[in-house]
Length: 71
View 1 (cartoon, rainbow, N blue to C red):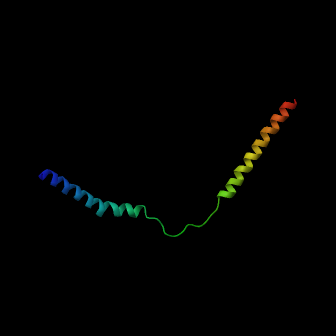
View 2 (spheres, one colour):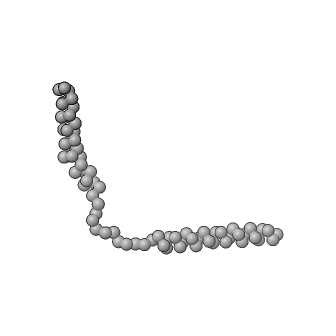
View 3 (cartoon, rainbow, N blue to C red):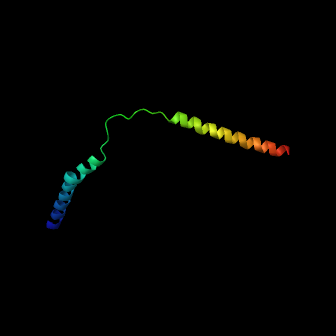
């Protein structure tokens, strides 16, 4: 029974070490800045840019295929 109590005490000591020393260091490393980030909306311009290029590529592919079928 003494070994089980020793194991429980060792486990509690390790948990205390984690709570007292490790957790504050982790919290400091992953601290999140409470200030809101500037609202920069880049999704719509990026979507339009990519969509425009895709339309041009598809149009060019169909145009070259149509041109090849005429020859």
